[in-house]
Amino acid sequence: MASLDRSLIAGLSIFEGIGSGDLDRIVGQARSIRIAKDQPVFEQEQEAHSFFLLLDGHVRVIKSTPDGHEVTVRYISPGELMGIASALGRTTYPANAIAAVDCVVLAWPSQLWATLATNFPSLSANTYKAVGTRLQDAHTRVIEMSTEQVEQRVAHALLKLIKQSGKKTEDGILIDFPISRQDVAEMTGTTLHTVSRLLSAWEDQGLVKSGRQRVVVVEPHRLLVIAEGRAAKS
Amino acid sequence: MASLDRSLIAGLSIFEGIGSGDLDRIVGQARSIRIAKDQPVFEQEQEAHSFFLLLDGHVRVIKSTPDGHEVTVRYISPGELMGIASALGRTTYPANAIAAVDCVVLAWPSQLWATLATNFPSLSANTYKAVGTRLQDAHTRVIEMSTEQVEQRVAHALLKLIKQSGKKTEDGILIDFPISRQDVAEMTGTTLHTVSRLLSAWEDQGLVKSGRQRVVVVEPHRLLVIAEGRAAKS
DNA sequence: CGTCCATTTGATCAGGGTCAAGACGAGTGG
DNA sequence: CCACTCGTCTTGACCCTGATCAAATGGACG
Image 1 (tube, each protein chain N blue to C red):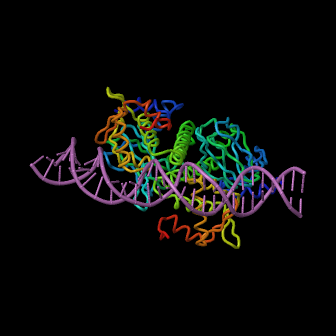
Image 2 (tube, each protein chain N blue to C red):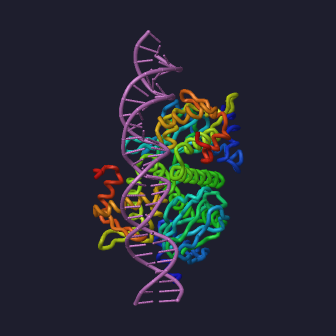
Image 3 (tube, protein in one colour):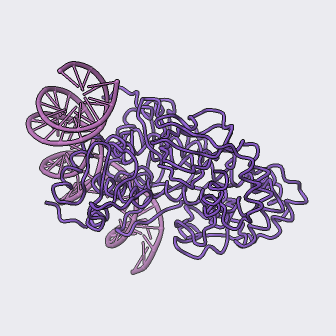
Protein backbone atom coordinates (compact mmCIF):
# COMPACT_ATOMS: atom_id res chain seq x y z
CA MET A 1 0.00 0.00 0.00
CA ALA A 2 2.76 2.42 0.90
CA SER A 3 4.60 1.50 -2.26
CA LEU A 4 1.45 1.77 -4.31
CA ASP A 5 1.05 5.27 -2.98
CA ARG A 6 4.59 6.09 -3.91
CA SER A 7 4.29 5.08 -7.52
CA LEU A 8 1.16 7.16 -7.87
CA ILE A 9 2.74 10.11 -6.13
CA ALA A 10 5.98 10.16 -8.06
CA GLY A 11 4.23 11.27 -11.22
CA LEU A 12 2.53 14.32 -9.71
CA SER A 13 3.55 17.70 -11.07
CA ILE A 14 4.22 19.07 -7.59
CA PHE A 15 7.02 16.55 -7.22
CA GLU A 16 8.53 17.16 -10.60
CA GLY A 17 12.28 17.38 -10.42
CA ILE A 18 12.50 15.64 -7.06
CA GLY A 19 14.55 12.47 -6.69
CA SER A 20 12.91 9.37 -5.32
CA GLY A 21 15.03 9.45 -2.17
CA ASP A 22 13.95 13.00 -1.44
CA LEU A 23 10.41 12.09 -2.33
CA ASP A 24 10.45 9.35 0.31
CA ARG A 25 11.78 11.80 2.83
CA ILE A 26 9.02 14.29 2.04
CA VAL A 27 6.16 11.83 1.90
CA GLY A 28 7.47 10.04 4.95
CA GLN A 29 6.62 13.04 7.06
CA ALA A 30 3.00 13.09 6.01
CA ARG A 31 0.08 11.26 7.49
CA SER A 32 -2.44 9.63 5.21
CA ILE A 33 -6.04 10.40 6.12
CA ARG A 34 -9.39 9.21 4.85
CA ILE A 35 -12.19 11.77 4.76
CA ALA A 36 -15.76 10.59 4.34
CA LYS A 37 -18.09 12.23 1.85
CA ASP A 38 -19.49 15.57 3.04
CA GLN A 39 -16.95 15.81 5.85
CA PRO A 40 -14.63 18.82 6.08
CA VAL A 41 -10.92 18.58 5.32
CA PHE A 42 -10.42 21.97 6.94
CA GLU A 43 -12.59 24.90 7.88
CA GLN A 44 -12.65 28.63 7.31
CA GLU A 45 -10.93 30.72 10.03
CA GLN A 46 -9.60 27.61 11.70
CA GLU A 47 -5.98 27.47 12.79
CA ALA A 48 -4.04 26.14 9.80
CA HIS A 49 -2.33 23.20 11.47
CA SER A 50 -1.67 21.21 8.28
CA PHE A 51 -1.47 21.41 4.55
CA PHE A 52 -2.73 18.67 2.30
CA LEU A 53 -2.27 16.80 -0.91
CA LEU A 54 -5.36 15.18 -2.34
CA LEU A 55 -4.58 11.62 -3.41
CA ASP A 56 -8.03 10.40 -4.28
CA GLY A 57 -11.50 11.90 -4.48
CA HIS A 58 -12.76 15.43 -5.05
CA VAL A 59 -12.94 18.35 -2.67
CA ARG A 60 -15.11 21.44 -2.90
CA VAL A 61 -13.60 24.66 -1.56
CA ILE A 62 -16.28 27.06 -0.37
CA LYS A 63 -16.40 30.47 1.19
CA SER A 64 -19.39 31.45 3.28
CA THR A 65 -20.45 35.05 3.60
CA PRO A 66 -21.83 36.57 6.83
CA ASP A 67 -25.26 36.84 5.20
CA GLY A 68 -25.53 33.16 4.43
CA HIS A 69 -24.44 33.00 0.81
CA GLU A 70 -22.02 30.29 -0.21
CA VAL A 71 -19.59 30.68 -3.06
CA THR A 72 -17.61 27.78 -4.46
CA VAL A 73 -14.02 28.89 -4.94
CA ARG A 74 -12.78 25.80 -6.70
CA TYR A 75 -12.84 22.04 -6.93
CA ILE A 76 -9.68 20.16 -6.03
CA SER A 77 -8.70 17.10 -8.05
CA PRO A 78 -6.31 14.31 -7.12
CA GLY A 79 -2.69 15.47 -7.17
CA GLU A 80 -3.45 19.03 -6.09
CA LEU A 81 -2.35 20.73 -2.92
CA MET A 82 -4.81 22.43 -0.63
CA GLY A 83 -4.80 24.34 2.61
CA ILE A 84 -1.37 25.78 1.89
CA ALA A 85 -1.96 28.78 4.11
CA SER A 86 1.48 28.34 5.61
CA ALA A 87 3.22 28.78 2.27
CA LEU A 88 1.48 32.12 1.92
CA GLY A 89 2.19 33.41 5.41
CA ARG A 90 -1.32 32.86 6.73
CA THR A 91 -2.10 31.20 10.03
CA THR A 92 -5.72 30.32 9.32
CA TYR A 93 -7.50 28.65 6.43
CA PRO A 94 -9.27 31.08 4.14
CA ALA A 95 -12.12 28.76 3.18
CA ASN A 96 -13.99 25.55 3.92
CA ALA A 97 -12.94 22.40 2.15
CA ILE A 98 -15.55 19.65 1.97
CA ALA A 99 -15.11 16.18 0.55
CA ALA A 100 -17.46 15.84 -2.43
CA VAL A 101 -16.91 12.08 -2.27
CA ASP A 102 -14.89 9.81 0.00
CA CYS A 103 -11.32 11.08 -0.19
CA VAL A 104 -7.77 10.17 0.72
CA VAL A 105 -5.34 12.94 1.55
CA LEU A 106 -1.77 13.30 2.74
CA ALA A 107 -1.34 15.83 5.54
CA TRP A 108 1.83 17.61 6.63
CA PRO A 109 2.10 19.78 9.73
CA SER A 110 2.16 23.42 8.65
CA GLN A 111 5.38 24.26 10.42
CA LEU A 112 7.13 21.73 8.22
CA TRP A 113 6.62 23.92 5.18
CA ALA A 114 9.57 26.21 5.88
CA THR A 115 11.94 23.27 6.21
CA LEU A 116 10.62 21.46 3.16
CA ALA A 117 10.73 24.61 1.07
CA THR A 118 14.37 25.34 1.88
CA ASN A 119 15.50 21.73 1.58
CA PHE A 120 13.65 21.03 -1.65
CA PRO A 121 13.68 24.08 -3.88
CA SER A 122 11.84 22.22 -6.65
CA LEU A 123 8.98 21.56 -4.31
CA SER A 124 8.82 25.22 -3.45
CA ALA A 125 8.98 26.30 -7.09
CA ASN A 126 6.31 23.81 -8.14
CA THR A 127 4.05 24.89 -5.31
CA TYR A 128 4.34 28.56 -6.13
CA LYS A 129 3.73 27.81 -9.74
CA ALA A 130 0.48 26.19 -8.68
CA VAL A 131 -0.31 29.27 -6.61
CA GLY A 132 0.32 31.41 -9.67
CA THR A 133 -2.12 29.30 -11.65
CA ARG A 134 -4.75 29.75 -8.98
CA LEU A 135 -4.27 33.48 -8.90
CA GLN A 136 -4.68 33.44 -12.63
CA ASP A 137 -7.83 31.33 -12.33
CA ALA A 138 -9.29 33.69 -9.78
CA HIS A 139 -8.71 36.66 -12.06
CA THR A 140 -10.26 34.79 -14.96
CA ARG A 141 -13.24 34.20 -12.77
CA VAL A 142 -13.52 37.90 -11.95
CA ILE A 143 -13.35 38.73 -15.63
CA GLU A 144 -16.02 36.20 -16.47
CA MET A 145 -18.28 37.55 -13.77
CA SER A 146 -17.73 41.09 -15.04
CA THR A 147 -18.20 40.59 -18.73
CA GLU A 148 -20.20 37.46 -19.44
CA GLN A 149 -23.87 36.56 -19.33
CA VAL A 150 -25.03 33.80 -17.03
CA GLU A 151 -25.40 31.39 -19.92
CA GLN A 152 -21.76 31.80 -20.90
CA ARG A 153 -20.54 31.50 -17.33
CA VAL A 154 -22.40 28.25 -16.77
CA ALA A 155 -21.09 26.88 -20.05
CA HIS A 156 -17.54 27.85 -19.05
CA ALA A 157 -18.00 26.23 -15.66
CA LEU A 158 -19.09 22.92 -17.18
CA LEU A 159 -16.18 23.00 -19.61
CA LYS A 160 -13.74 23.60 -16.75
CA LEU A 161 -15.27 20.75 -14.80
CA ILE A 162 -15.01 18.24 -17.63
CA LYS A 163 -11.46 19.33 -18.35
CA GLN A 164 -10.52 18.89 -14.72
CA SER A 165 -12.56 15.85 -13.80
CA GLY A 166 -14.13 14.57 -16.95
CA LYS A 167 -14.60 10.87 -17.54
CA LYS A 168 -15.43 9.50 -20.93
CA THR A 169 -18.65 7.50 -21.16
CA GLU A 170 -20.55 6.28 -24.15
CA ASP A 171 -22.94 9.23 -23.89
CA GLY A 172 -20.24 11.86 -23.63
CA ILE A 173 -18.02 13.28 -20.92
CA LEU A 174 -19.27 12.80 -17.38
CA ILE A 175 -18.38 15.10 -14.50
CA ASP A 176 -16.94 12.51 -12.21
CA PHE A 177 -18.52 13.43 -8.89
CA PRO A 178 -22.00 14.32 -7.64
CA ILE A 179 -22.83 17.88 -8.57
CA SER A 180 -26.21 19.50 -8.13
CA ARG A 181 -27.76 22.49 -9.89
CA GLN A 182 -27.19 24.39 -6.67
CA ASP A 183 -23.48 23.56 -6.79
CA VAL A 184 -23.17 24.89 -10.33
CA ALA A 185 -25.07 28.00 -9.28
CA GLU A 186 -22.57 28.60 -6.48
CA MET A 187 -19.72 28.34 -8.95
CA THR A 188 -21.22 30.83 -11.37
CA GLY A 189 -22.94 33.36 -9.19
CA THR A 190 -26.47 32.53 -10.20
CA THR A 191 -29.43 30.55 -8.85
CA LEU A 192 -30.28 26.90 -9.10
CA HIS A 193 -33.40 27.90 -11.02
CA THR A 194 -31.47 29.51 -13.81
CA VAL A 195 -29.02 26.61 -13.98
CA SER A 196 -31.91 24.18 -14.17
CA ARG A 197 -33.52 26.12 -17.02
CA LEU A 198 -30.24 26.25 -18.91
CA LEU A 199 -29.54 22.56 -18.51
CA SER A 200 -33.08 21.73 -19.58
CA ALA A 201 -32.70 23.87 -22.69
CA TRP A 202 -29.33 22.34 -23.49
CA GLU A 203 -30.71 18.87 -22.96
CA ASP A 204 -33.44 19.62 -25.50
CA GLN A 205 -30.76 20.63 -27.97
CA GLY A 206 -28.78 17.47 -27.26
CA LEU A 207 -25.82 19.34 -25.81
CA VAL A 208 -25.85 17.65 -22.43
CA LYS A 209 -27.54 14.87 -20.54
CA SER A 210 -28.20 15.45 -16.89
CA GLY A 211 -29.94 13.98 -13.96
CA ARG A 212 -29.92 14.11 -10.22
CA GLN A 213 -26.47 15.41 -9.19
CA ARG A 214 -25.12 14.24 -12.49
CA VAL A 215 -24.06 16.03 -15.67
CA VAL A 216 -22.76 14.55 -18.91
CA VAL A 217 -21.56 16.86 -21.64
CA VAL A 218 -22.46 15.34 -24.98
CA GLU A 219 -21.15 18.02 -27.30
CA PRO A 220 -18.29 19.95 -25.73
CA HIS A 221 -17.66 21.83 -28.93
CA ARG A 222 -21.13 23.30 -29.18
CA LEU A 223 -20.97 24.16 -25.50
CA LEU A 224 -17.77 26.05 -26.19
CA VAL A 225 -19.55 28.06 -28.86
CA ILE A 226 -22.06 29.14 -26.22
CA ALA A 227 -19.31 29.84 -23.70
CA GLU A 228 -17.53 32.14 -26.13
CA GLY A 229 -20.73 34.04 -26.69
CA ARG A 230 -21.05 33.19 -30.35
CA ALA A 231 -24.22 31.21 -30.33
CA ALA A 232 -27.40 31.92 -32.25
CA LYS A 233 -30.01 32.37 -29.59
CA SER A 234 -33.12 30.33 -30.26
CA MET B 1 19.11 60.80 -3.96
CA ALA B 2 20.28 57.23 -3.69
CA SER B 3 20.35 57.56 0.07
CA LEU B 4 16.93 59.16 0.10
CA ASP B 5 15.65 56.16 -1.77
CA ARG B 6 17.24 53.86 0.69
CA SER B 7 15.64 55.40 3.75
CA LEU B 8 12.23 55.22 2.09
CA ILE B 9 12.79 51.68 0.98
CA ALA B 10 14.01 50.31 4.27
CA GLY B 11 10.57 50.70 5.85
CA LEU B 12 8.66 48.70 3.24
CA SER B 13 7.00 45.52 4.39
CA ILE B 14 8.59 43.49 1.60
CA PHE B 15 11.97 44.18 3.14
CA GLU B 16 10.94 43.44 6.68
CA GLY B 17 13.56 41.35 8.44
CA ILE B 18 16.32 42.23 6.00
CA GLY B 19 19.50 43.87 7.25
CA SER B 20 20.63 47.13 5.71
CA GLY B 21 23.70 45.53 4.16
CA ASP B 22 21.57 42.91 2.45
CA LEU B 23 19.11 45.59 1.48
CA ASP B 24 21.85 47.52 -0.30
CA ARG B 25 22.88 44.36 -2.08
CA ILE B 26 19.33 43.74 -3.24
CA VAL B 27 18.48 47.28 -4.26
CA GLY B 28 21.89 47.68 -5.86
CA GLN B 29 20.89 45.20 -8.53
CA ALA B 30 17.80 47.12 -9.56
CA ARG B 31 17.45 49.92 -12.05
CA SER B 32 15.33 52.90 -11.18
CA ILE B 33 12.92 53.90 -13.94
CA ARG B 34 10.52 56.76 -14.43
CA ILE B 35 7.27 55.98 -16.20
CA ALA B 36 5.14 58.81 -17.52
CA LYS B 37 1.41 58.96 -16.90
CA ASP B 38 -0.61 56.63 -19.16
CA GLN B 39 2.50 54.73 -20.22
CA PRO B 40 2.73 50.97 -19.66
CA VAL B 41 5.02 49.44 -17.05
CA PHE B 42 4.53 46.06 -18.68
CA GLU B 43 2.04 44.49 -21.03
CA GLN B 44 -0.14 41.41 -21.17
CA GLU B 45 1.44 38.37 -22.87
CA GLN B 46 4.78 40.12 -23.10
CA GLU B 47 7.93 38.28 -22.11
CA ALA B 48 8.38 38.90 -18.37
CA HIS B 49 11.90 40.31 -18.45
CA SER B 50 11.68 42.16 -15.13
CA PHE B 51 9.78 42.46 -11.92
CA PHE B 52 9.09 45.77 -10.28
CA LEU B 53 8.70 47.63 -7.05
CA LEU B 54 6.61 50.78 -7.21
CA LEU B 55 8.36 53.58 -5.35
CA ASP B 56 6.11 56.47 -6.23
CA GLY B 57 2.86 56.94 -8.10
CA HIS B 58 -0.05 54.63 -8.81
CA VAL B 59 -0.42 51.87 -11.36
CA ARG B 60 -3.57 50.34 -12.77
CA VAL B 61 -3.43 46.64 -13.61
CA ILE B 62 -5.87 45.76 -16.36
CA LYS B 63 -6.84 42.66 -18.27
CA SER B 64 -8.33 42.98 -21.72
CA THR B 65 -10.70 40.39 -23.09
CA PRO B 66 -10.74 39.29 -26.73
CA ASP B 67 -14.10 41.01 -27.21
CA GLY B 68 -12.84 44.40 -26.12
CA HIS B 69 -13.89 44.54 -22.50
CA GLU B 70 -11.38 45.82 -19.98
CA VAL B 71 -11.37 44.72 -16.38
CA THR B 72 -9.29 46.40 -13.73
CA VAL B 73 -7.59 43.76 -11.64
CA ARG B 74 -6.11 46.05 -9.02
CA TYR B 75 -4.39 49.31 -8.29
CA ILE B 76 -0.79 49.21 -7.11
CA SER B 77 0.35 51.65 -4.44
CA PRO B 78 3.89 52.70 -3.56
CA GLY B 79 5.79 49.93 -1.80
CA GLU B 80 4.06 47.11 -3.65
CA LEU B 81 5.64 44.62 -6.00
CA MET B 82 4.26 44.05 -9.47
CA GLY B 83 4.99 41.90 -12.47
CA ILE B 84 6.29 39.09 -10.30
CA ALA B 85 5.53 36.49 -12.93
CA SER B 86 8.94 34.92 -12.33
CA ALA B 87 8.17 34.19 -8.69
CA LEU B 88 5.12 32.26 -9.82
CA GLY B 89 6.78 30.26 -12.55
CA ARG B 90 5.33 32.27 -15.42
CA THR B 91 7.33 33.58 -18.35
CA THR B 92 4.87 36.23 -19.52
CA TYR B 93 2.98 38.98 -17.76
CA PRO B 94 -0.65 38.13 -17.13
CA ALA B 95 -1.99 41.68 -17.46
CA ASN B 96 -1.30 45.23 -18.55
CA ALA B 97 0.08 47.68 -16.02
CA ILE B 98 -0.46 51.34 -16.83
CA ALA B 99 0.84 54.30 -14.86
CA ALA B 100 -2.17 56.22 -13.51
CA VAL B 101 0.17 59.14 -12.79
CA ASP B 102 3.88 59.72 -13.31
CA CYS B 103 5.63 56.89 -11.50
CA VAL B 104 9.02 55.77 -10.25
CA VAL B 105 9.75 52.06 -10.11
CA LEU B 106 12.68 49.80 -9.31
CA ALA B 107 13.16 47.00 -11.83
CA TRP B 108 15.06 43.75 -11.36
CA PRO B 109 15.76 41.29 -14.16
CA SER B 110 13.43 38.32 -13.79
CA GLN B 111 16.18 35.74 -13.73
CA LEU B 112 17.49 37.36 -10.58
CA TRP B 113 14.48 36.21 -8.62
CA ALA B 114 15.74 32.69 -8.01
CA THR B 115 19.03 33.97 -6.60
CA LEU B 116 17.43 36.64 -4.47
CA ALA B 117 14.85 34.22 -3.14
CA THR B 118 17.44 31.66 -2.02
CA ASN B 119 19.86 34.23 -0.63
CA PHE B 120 17.25 36.24 1.23
CA PRO B 121 14.59 33.96 2.65
CA SER B 122 12.80 36.87 4.30
CA LEU B 123 12.37 38.52 0.94
CA SER B 124 10.87 35.34 -0.41
CA ALA B 125 8.57 34.89 2.56
CA ASN B 126 7.39 38.50 2.43
CA THR B 127 6.75 38.26 -1.29
CA TYR B 128 4.71 35.11 -1.02
CA LYS B 129 2.77 36.60 1.82
CA ALA B 130 1.86 39.45 -0.53
CA VAL B 131 0.87 36.90 -3.14
CA GLY B 132 -1.34 35.23 -0.56
CA THR B 133 -3.03 38.53 0.14
CA ARG B 134 -3.69 39.06 -3.53
CA LEU B 135 -5.16 35.61 -3.91
CA GLN B 136 -7.37 36.41 -0.99
CA ASP B 137 -8.36 39.74 -2.56
CA ALA B 138 -9.20 38.07 -5.83
CA HIS B 139 -11.46 35.59 -4.07
CA THR B 140 -13.12 38.38 -2.15
CA ARG B 141 -13.76 40.05 -5.45
CA VAL B 142 -15.37 36.91 -6.85
CA ILE B 143 -17.56 36.68 -3.80
CA GLU B 144 -18.61 40.29 -4.09
CA MET B 145 -19.44 39.85 -7.73
CA SER B 146 -21.48 36.75 -6.92
CA THR B 147 -23.47 37.96 -3.99
CA GLU B 148 -23.67 41.74 -3.94
CA GLN B 149 -25.70 44.32 -5.80
CA VAL B 150 -23.93 46.91 -7.92
CA GLU B 151 -24.49 49.60 -5.30
CA GLN B 152 -22.67 47.56 -2.67
CA ARG B 153 -19.82 46.69 -4.99
CA VAL B 154 -19.20 50.28 -5.92
CA ALA B 155 -19.31 51.31 -2.27
CA HIS B 156 -16.82 48.56 -1.43
CA ALA B 157 -14.57 49.65 -4.27
CA LEU B 158 -14.47 53.23 -3.05
CA LEU B 159 -13.75 52.09 0.48
CA LYS B 160 -10.88 49.92 -0.74
CA LEU B 161 -9.49 52.82 -2.74
CA ILE B 162 -9.52 55.25 0.16
CA LYS B 163 -7.99 52.67 2.45
CA GLN B 164 -5.22 52.02 -0.04
CA SER B 165 -4.65 55.50 -1.42
CA GLY B 166 -6.74 57.85 0.63
CA LYS B 167 -5.49 61.33 1.44
CA LYS B 168 -7.18 63.44 4.06
CA THR B 169 -8.50 66.77 2.88
CA GLU B 170 -10.77 69.24 4.61
CA ASP B 171 -13.74 67.87 2.68
CA GLY B 172 -13.08 64.24 3.47
CA ILE B 173 -10.85 61.51 2.13
CA LEU B 174 -9.62 61.99 -1.41
CA ILE B 175 -8.68 59.16 -3.72
CA ASP B 176 -5.20 60.30 -4.50
CA PHE B 177 -5.03 59.79 -8.25
CA PRO B 178 -7.22 60.56 -11.25
CA ILE B 179 -10.07 58.08 -11.45
CA SER B 180 -13.00 58.28 -13.81
CA ARG B 181 -16.49 56.80 -13.61
CA GLN B 182 -15.36 54.42 -16.31
CA ASP B 183 -12.43 53.28 -14.14
CA VAL B 184 -14.74 52.55 -11.23
CA ALA B 185 -17.06 50.70 -13.57
CA GLU B 186 -14.18 48.50 -14.73
CA MET B 187 -13.35 47.66 -11.12
CA THR B 188 -16.88 46.67 -10.25
CA GLY B 189 -18.23 45.03 -13.37
CA THR B 190 -20.78 47.64 -14.23
CA THR B 191 -21.12 50.63 -16.60
CA LEU B 192 -20.02 54.21 -16.26
CA HIS B 193 -23.67 55.22 -16.42
CA THR B 194 -24.59 53.30 -13.33
CA VAL B 195 -21.53 54.57 -11.46
CA SER B 196 -22.42 58.11 -12.42
CA ARG B 197 -25.96 57.71 -11.17
CA LEU B 198 -24.77 56.24 -7.89
CA LEU B 199 -22.22 58.98 -7.29
CA SER B 200 -24.81 61.63 -8.09
CA ALA B 201 -27.23 60.09 -5.62
CA TRP B 202 -24.54 59.83 -2.96
CA GLU B 203 -23.48 63.39 -3.60
CA ASP B 204 -27.06 64.52 -2.98
CA GLN B 205 -26.99 62.69 0.32
CA GLY B 206 -23.69 64.28 1.24
CA LEU B 207 -21.82 60.97 1.28
CA VAL B 208 -19.24 61.91 -1.34
CA LYS B 209 -18.04 64.85 -3.39
CA SER B 210 -16.90 64.13 -6.87
CA GLY B 211 -15.86 65.79 -10.05
CA ARG B 212 -13.93 65.08 -13.17
CA GLN B 213 -11.68 62.10 -12.44
CA ARG B 214 -11.87 62.95 -8.79
CA VAL B 215 -13.68 61.38 -5.85
CA VAL B 216 -13.73 62.48 -2.21
CA VAL B 217 -15.46 60.33 0.35
CA VAL B 218 -17.07 62.58 2.92
CA GLU B 219 -18.70 60.00 5.15
CA PRO B 220 -16.88 56.66 5.02
CA HIS B 221 -19.04 55.26 7.76
CA ARG B 222 -22.31 55.77 5.92
CA LEU B 223 -20.69 54.41 2.78
CA LEU B 224 -19.77 51.30 4.73
CA VAL B 225 -23.40 50.89 5.75
CA ILE B 226 -24.30 50.81 2.06
CA ALA B 227 -21.44 48.45 1.27
CA GLU B 228 -22.60 45.97 3.87
CA GLY B 229 -26.06 46.04 2.40
CA ARG B 230 -27.73 47.44 5.49
CA ALA B 231 -28.98 50.70 4.11
CA ALA B 232 -32.54 51.98 4.00
CA LYS B 233 -33.20 52.51 0.32
CA SER B 234 -34.73 55.93 -0.38
C1' DC C 1 -12.88 80.07 -28.78
C1' DG C 2 -13.34 75.49 -30.29
C1' DT C 3 -12.61 70.68 -29.55
C1' DC C 4 -12.48 66.69 -26.95
C1' DC C 5 -13.68 63.98 -22.94
C1' DA C 6 -15.85 63.12 -18.82
C1' DT C 7 -20.11 63.37 -16.91
C1' DT C 8 -25.14 63.63 -16.31
C1' DT C 9 -29.72 62.28 -16.99
C1' DG C 10 -33.85 60.42 -19.24
C1' DA C 11 -36.36 56.54 -21.48
C1' DT C 12 -36.71 51.90 -22.52
C1' DC C 13 -36.33 47.07 -21.93
C1' DA C 14 -34.62 42.46 -21.06
C1' DG C 15 -31.90 39.14 -18.41
C1' DG C 16 -32.38 36.72 -14.82
C1' DG C 17 -33.77 36.79 -9.79
C1' DT C 18 -37.70 35.83 -6.81
C1' DC C 19 -41.88 33.57 -5.55
C1' DA C 20 -44.69 29.61 -5.85
C1' DA C 21 -46.06 24.80 -6.97
C1' DG C 22 -45.36 20.41 -8.34
C1' DA C 23 -43.03 16.35 -10.11
C1' DC C 24 -39.60 13.08 -9.68
C1' DG C 25 -36.46 9.80 -7.52
C1' DA C 26 -33.75 7.76 -3.92
C1' DG C 27 -33.26 6.08 0.41
C1' DT C 28 -35.69 4.54 4.93
C1' DG C 29 -38.42 2.17 7.98
C1' DG C 30 -42.23 -0.64 8.62
C1' DC D 1 -42.18 -4.90 -0.94
C1' DC D 2 -44.46 -0.78 -0.32
C1' DA D 3 -45.39 3.71 1.55
C1' DC D 4 -43.42 7.79 3.14
C1' DT D 5 -40.36 11.48 3.29
C1' DC D 6 -36.88 14.39 2.07
C1' DG D 7 -33.98 16.58 -1.18
C1' DT D 8 -33.35 17.62 -6.04
C1' DC D 9 -35.10 19.23 -10.05
C1' DT D 10 -38.56 21.49 -13.18
C1' DT D 11 -41.47 25.02 -14.72
C1' DG D 12 -44.53 29.04 -14.76
C1' DA D 13 -45.52 33.96 -13.61
C1' DC D 14 -43.98 38.24 -12.32
C1' DC D 15 -41.06 42.02 -11.51
C1' DC D 16 -36.77 44.63 -10.50
C1' DT D 17 -32.10 45.89 -11.21
C1' DG D 18 -29.17 47.66 -14.06
C1' DA D 19 -27.72 47.54 -19.13
C1' DT D 20 -28.52 49.91 -23.35
C1' DC D 21 -29.64 53.73 -26.27
C1' DA D 22 -29.71 58.58 -26.86
C1' DA D 23 -28.65 63.48 -26.00
C1' DA D 24 -27.25 67.21 -23.74
C1' DT D 25 -24.16 69.63 -20.50
C1' DG D 26 -19.83 71.11 -18.66
C1' DG D 27 -14.80 71.48 -17.93
C1' DA D 28 -10.15 71.36 -19.43
C1' DC D 29 -6.81 72.48 -22.52
C1' DG D 30 -4.61 73.91 -26.80
